[in-house]
Image (tube, rainbow, N blue to C red; front, side, top):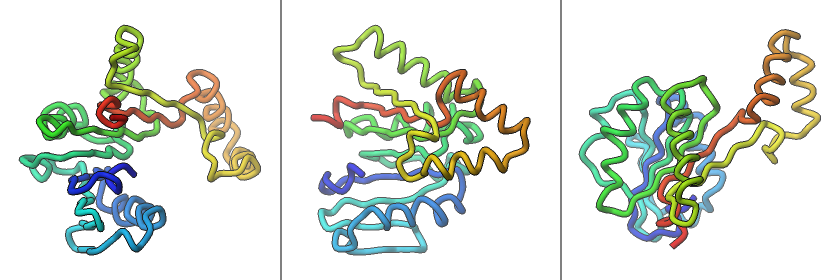
Length: 193
């Protein structure tokens, strides 16, 4: 989590909804972040202050107005392919907040058909191809088999318990595009410098 090494930065972790924040994203952050790095927690505002002055806040993609007007150093956009109005949220609300601060964004999502997220991924892939030595994008794709936290046995057991048609569809998706999980990183050059 890059914000832990960037002093006095502001990081937003934007989730699909409040339950995703409270039940998944915040507990995962607490699991990964050593407790001695957290100096203040405000559960009501879902904001944590770290020992280096960095602030991490969890927001939802439910209201564009609640996300406007602040400069942000780092954004995590969780399951952004499933956001209602995702295109507007990214281009009109969130990406402008990164400007002027050298801000970066990390998009994490399962695929959701051919929507704004897929178009953004294609734009990033094209930029990587055309501007390989100076692109601001990195695209990483993988399947459930690439997740180190899930054993092959657990995956196979789940496939056996899924009705046959759905199991066939799951396998077909993996074989067609190999992307049951997509990660995009914006402003990679800033992140690495």
